[in-house]
Amino acid sequence: MLKKLLITLCVSFMITSGFSQEKVKGNKNVTLVETKIEDFKTIAFGEKFKIELIQSDTPSVEIETDENLHEVIQFSVIDSVLSFSTTAKIQSSKRINITVNITKSLQHIEVNGDAEVSAANTLKNDSLVLKVNDYAKAFLNIKNKNFKFINNNKATFGFNSKSKLNIESDIVFLELSEKSKTEALIESDSLQVYMYQSADAKIEGETELLKLNTINSSSFNSRHLTTNECELTTEDSSSASVYVLNNIILNTSGSSKVELYGNPKITIESFKNTSTLSKKEL
Image 1 (tube, rainbow, N blue to C red):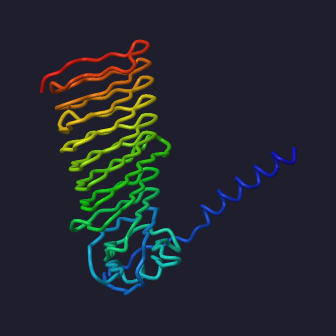
Image 2 (spheres, one colour):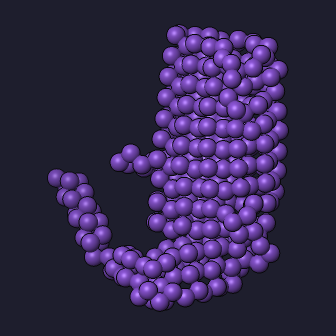
Image 3 (cartoon, one colour):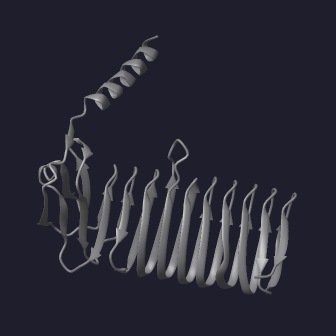
């Protein structure tokens, strides 16, 4: 009984807090405020923020919005992490444009909730990790030595993360899960992909080596991604379409399906259950 009472009180508090949150409307008098900030390695934000990144030599935050909303939109750099929040629920505004000038120090981007990140130019650095959660979105052009993308959709009510990326990197690592959707144009020496749950990916471009692992009901379409060497493992009811020029090593199980384009040498290490391999032409 005590446990049930505590749960009821917590839920009641959350509902009351949600309804009691202060609400504000923009006064339609738009102003632009730029604030210089200390350099940071991570930018993390959620809610409904839409933030545009610009490669620069000096870090700063530019906010163009209704004059009375500047004090509602808060940001700070703590322990090299730039974060954003609001002090009240914004019901309406004439404009909310947020631009963050970043430097090559940036190493991590994390986008949550219903937020969106984009870039006005190509982001260049040595290494970058991009993490998209919930039903957030990312639209970025990236050029570096090492890039990792985690698309981890845990949203309810059927919302899906929909991210579009243009990546030029020596090493690319993709971890795609839940109901996430990813579209990417990739040029790399090595591309590693791990897919889970109902993740869906459409990849184009070129890579020397593709290492792909799909499980659950995930789906990977890369028939317009040219790869010389491929190591492919499919499990459960997942599916994969790949275009391979030289060599492919296959491990398939469950009811998974593989569609193979090109004319590579095929090495089958395991071919279990009712899994299938189909030869296709572009």
